[in-house]
View (tube, rainbow, N blue to C red):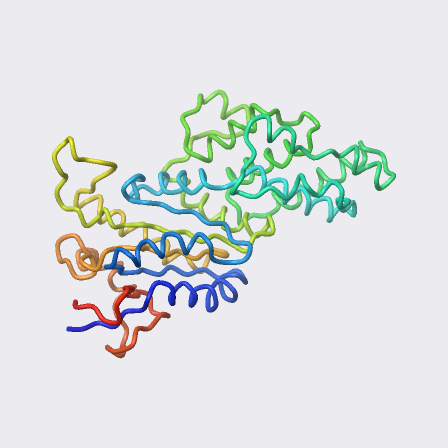
Length: 344
């Protein structure tokens, strides 16, 4: 049976136009499974998704290097690709606007660094906001400006109950650190960022910043949902997440000397499908998220390790009524290739 496919470049243009510029950019969320059987198409998608969308953050998660059946590992991989300090600075800028002390143009540079060049260590210290300079510009007392902007930050972060409690605590600390008044030290800032990225940290260090437990399978999903909302609060359009599941098709691990990365038992493969199913079911409570789940065509039909082995996911992405000669880019499962047709 011949199955219609759509070209990778054409599909990227479609996603940009029909999803990111509209629905997702306005706060919607969607998950698409992409069956990609062509090496050139895979390469085009990998590079293309990173360039899509005006104001979107991008994160890639590869099943070869990340245990994709564990939600905490997926969140940590995403977190390592984001500029948490820059996002906090953007929220502080919003707080200054709310407090009626907008940042003068000559001081705007500390808010403009992006995730592509996230400041680390001493660079982040140099990018700290100079409240005294902003106070002088507005001809107000620096202490009064600090109190006003701190109250505004607390209103933005702590009163947003759609953010999980742990996420609110972490983001409040990062925002306070950007104020440079000593409430949160550079060491404590690095502890928070390390916690988000899944690093092993002493429990005492976590308690010092108000965090009680590491990122785990129980709190990672609320953290991921909170992240999508936080990006919107920070003025970003949302998140494009590229989830590469090609490795799930490898049923037998190669000899020891030829192995690289992670391999998946059938149980772990089904757990990975369950994670995708949860992402699909959470779209109604997620903001500004486009998830492209890439998998090889063999997993669309394989009874042992493919979608048919996990009915809960297969039912959510089962082929709708379609024209065999024309691909439907709106479908939950889209077949992508360099050729006009592929054999299934």
